[in-house]
Amino acid sequence: MDTPHYAFFEGDIVPIEQAKVSIMTHALHYGTAAFAGLRAYWNADENQLYLFRPLDHFKRFRASAELLYIDLPYTPEKMRDIVISLLCHEGYHTDTYIRPLVYKSQQVIGVRLHNLTSDLAIFAIPFGNYLEHEEGINVTFSSWRRVDDNAIPPRGKICGAYVNSALTKTEAALDGFDDALVLDQEGHIAEASAANFFMVRNGKVITPPVYADILEGITRNTCITLLAEEMGLVVEERPIDRTELFRADEAFLCGTAVQIAAIVTADHHRIGTGKMGPLVTELRRLFFQVVHGELPQYRQWVEPVYSLEPIR
Ligand code: PMP
Image 1 (cartoon, rainbow, N blue to C red):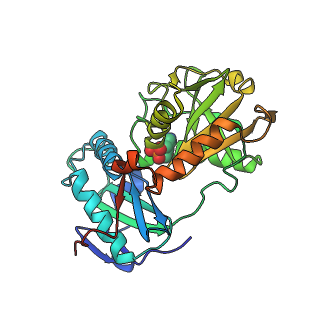
Image 2: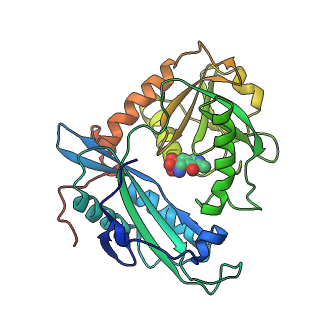
């Protein structure tokens, strides 16, 4: 993985070597941190880097922090500006992944969330595909259940909860799959290790509802919007049984890292033809146009990085 040159750390943009924490940091011991993950896409024709839906990511980031009793002293707009400044420092002319992290920074022993200091850190790295074959992935069903809203809220991107995602991903990878779908406590499909799930059955697009222990994904919302506005398909949000997927015509995962990845087999059952289907093909085409700032009707979702004055 590429190393960034800079980070936003303890209130300033500093060389990455200076962005270090102590081994006594609370978050390191108890997972008391939350993160976000954004992408910026390079548009070579326009010589421009486009940051995708930063304000939506930072609104969710603030909400994740609040679950940990952290009142972030930065508005979403301010954090967007910090990211733009950071990207201007880096000067990337390539697709980029941005990782904001808010963490309990106090050097203290004691499991709690209250009466602890916290800090914000952000860095950005060049980033291509997260999954090797987005146009055809093979998934399994995890033997792990999705972390429950009454245990650790999956609605927030809370670092500690990502052990659940890591267990899921590693089990899937060691068994030879690209990723796994995780069931919620009721036995319905929640999502994948770090992506939301959709399937197409008899012309209907269906996704698990927000109460199925999922992260309320920004790419999920992007897909729902594009399917409705550009393809005339209203997505049904309802619990989904595992074997419904085996009967599906198409299925896909979506998320900032995963982008849109077509599921072609699930537990060795072929989905549809066993190749990426027409709906996912069209949705991906639209998605990549949108994130590159190529569709005027979705320009409000992308922020040009290099046309603004960097804040130093
Ligand atoms: N679910 C989980 C568990 C995730 O970690 C992610 C990635 N952030 C997603 C879904 C997709 O969310 P988004 O589209 O906002 O990146």
